[in-house]
Image (cartoon, rainbow, N blue to C red; front, side, top):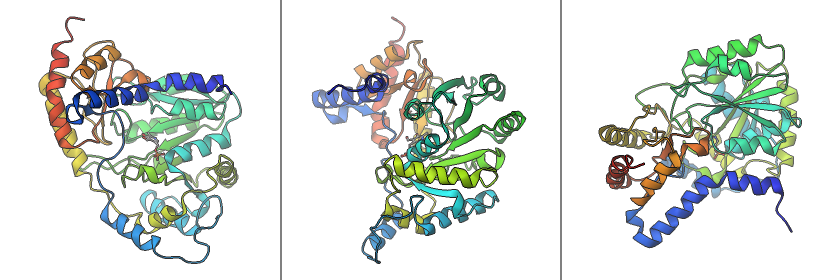
Length: 391
Ligand SMILES: Cc1ncc(COP(=O)(O)O)c(C=O)c1O
């Protein structure tokens, strides 16, 4: 049986992280794992918060009747109430359980929403550089991705977004704190997008994909997109903040300010089911119901950011210091980011070229590695920037 042409093409386009992963495996076999410095995957390496693990252990040992049964597709009412209370307290908006669907991660939330609103050919704006899965999420539902470049500080520019809007535009995928840049979008930029959307003669909804929200540094607070932009749905998860991406637990929250919130909720409940998710993992819905207020310890990520930024600055790399997440997105010292990635690779340093995020000329480092990997990689970063000149 042949693979669908569309999937074969997507596999080819999606191959950057996979290719680097394969290179890493080859290098580890060749040189030994301690000689390879792998910054490719955004896979948290810290432990989940102890309260979360303790709650998991206690709940796993309890067996109320029907606890492993199918449930309403949007999830357990208690979990949805807990998320609604949490969001209402944070945002001042009147969220109830009827605005919340528990989902299979933020990825599940994005797909559930897009499946619910896109007709073939409808357009979704993404801001470059973008999370590398967005093009595929949009294609999953026959949508058309429209790329809008962010400015030289990696911030969205409402005027550029305005220029990209057509009568077919249904949504804007917005991710702050941002993967891959680590930028936190300021409130005034978000207000600018709100003003733009209010001026349109058809509804365009922002999908605020925010799985990194608690991971912000230097005592910052993260502006609440849903309070600043009226037409917002939130896609969120505990993947990064509780370091549990394998557990696949998240939620979709529909702003109570959307006039069509009830109809959208019903559509999303249906989409969550027929996409094959059916419902979010039952045990983890119970865990987050009880642990939703737990604040993760982000000091390790801030320490690693500080260490890596200090080392790269000393070596002459240029970048905007991340305000959140665990990513760093430096400028490639060579215009050809792929050629520079190959230079790093010769010293066992694995990074992902900016081309994989729709912004050539940069590269992404994921600081989800022990401090020893950061320290061990620094000579490789030094040699690569020294050796760029022969090109
Ligand atoms: C911006 C962004 N959105 C969504 C996801 C998917 O997260 P989840 O594990 O919650 O599905 C990721 C994962 O890396 C991400 O970086």
